[in-house]
Structures are given as C-alpha cells and as structure tokens.
Length: 335
Picture 1 (cartoon, rainbow, N blue to C red):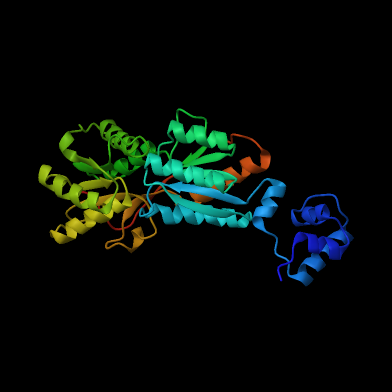
Picture 2: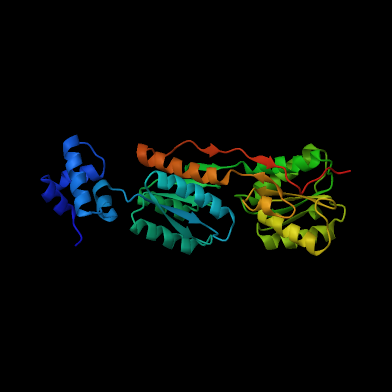
C-alpha cells in the first residue's frame, strides 16, 4: 500500500500543511512535532512525491543542461562537475543533446518547460535570440558554460580562449620554434574558433613572425579534423616544426597521422593541444596541452545557477577561470 501525505498527517495528529513544512524544512513547527512526523514517515515508509513537493514549494529540484555535442570528450568532465554540485544540493540533472540545431533546441526547451525545471545551464553554443526569449518567458535563471553572449545579459563561466591560445603559441615560441602551424576550429565560430585563432596570430605578431595562410587549417575540433589538418599542413609547409592544435581531439588526430606516416613526435614535429581532457596523459606520447579546469567549470556553473535560485537574483558575477600549460612529452626544444 502506498501511503499519502494525508495518511502521515492523520497518524501524526497534525495538519497536512505541517507535514509539508517538515518535509520542506520550512519553519512553523516545534522540534517535538518534527520528530513525531519523521517517526510516522519512517513507520509508514512514506516517500514524498517529487512532483507534489514541487507544487508546494514551486521547485522541482531539477535543472536542465543543453549540450550541442554529446560525442565531444569535454562533455564527460563538464557533466561530472555539474552533477556533483547538483547532487550535493539535492537536485537532479536532465541532459539535452541539441546538436546545435535550432528546431531541436526549441523542442528541448519546451520539454524542460513542461518538466518545470528550476534552471538551465547552456553549454558551448551561441545563445540565439529565440532561445533567450523563450527562457525568459519560462521565468527561470540560466548560466552559460564555455560560451558567452554579448547580446544578452546572461552570466557565464569560461576560460579566456584568446589568452589561452596566445599562451600555447608563446610556449612553442619560447621552446625555439619559429615555424608554427595551427589546426583550428571553424574560423567563423565565435565561441572558440575565432578567439583561439586570434590568440595564435597575436602571439606570432608579438614575436615578429609573419602570419601566412599556409600555416593554418581551419575546419572543426574533431579527431578527423586533426587527421586532415595535419596532412594538409605537412603538404603546405614542410618547414613547420610545431603545431598548436585548438583542441585535444584535434591533437589526437594529428598524433595519429604522424604515427601512420612515420613522423616522430616530438623529434620531427612538436604538438600542443587544448583542453587537458582526461585521456591526454594516456596518449602516446603523453600530450602537452593547455588545461581548462573542466570539472571545476561545470561545478562553478552549477553553483552560480543555484546561487541565483537561492537569492532570487537574475544575475551573478561572470567567472573567468585560469588556464595552465601541462607539460608532458609532445613538445621539445627546437635545436
């Protein structure tokens, strides 16, 4: 037999409202009453219905997370951080795979609205006007993770991509490399593509090295893009002694191409990646890379969202988290 909150109230000799206040840790009852209600709940084996509790306190203790690409290795670490923080605070997570598709994104937002979620974390994609307007109508807070918006006042947590790309390129320059190539994301991608290319170009310029189109391959952030980019750069400019890969997945593709074609890493060509995915140190050789604190970024985004829910503020301070160079075995001094 499934007992209801009415059964608990009757056996404890209190009102349904009092049982509700005890369940939701709200004021308005004595310690003796609390103990009596908790005792009855235990005796009956009563399990509060999450939807019913949500109707009472106007919260479902559920947040939505929208990812443009679930196959990306970044997702695991971001989600790890988000779920860890949500779990600590007694909430659950609904994950939505939008494929960066406008129609699919809107359908997921409608679904999340029907589920009466408390807030949204929007990851690694451009926040379009239709998304922003719909979420505003939902009346819930939102935090951007690994992206930002100039058009809309939405708090975000990310690394400074341009600065991090500058640091990666400067690291190669300081190792004595003058002929440096880049395998980047799409040059029109305002989230991570364009900023990382700008950082690369700026580092070359500050070191008095001219940028030419034959030292960059710009398409996407995948393993296949790394394979294709490495092949093209090796054909376009045989003098290249180092590669800045704009993601670790790109770097893994470049390493694979090098292995297949007898190019020794780092003896013939040095490679530095970007992200510090958990498998970067498992690569052969272990990958030198720019580290984003991915799990911490996920935790921070969730913490910001729950802070907004708790305080009622529609905006919290943006967070730019620090990057770092993780030195392993894919970069050597240029002799």
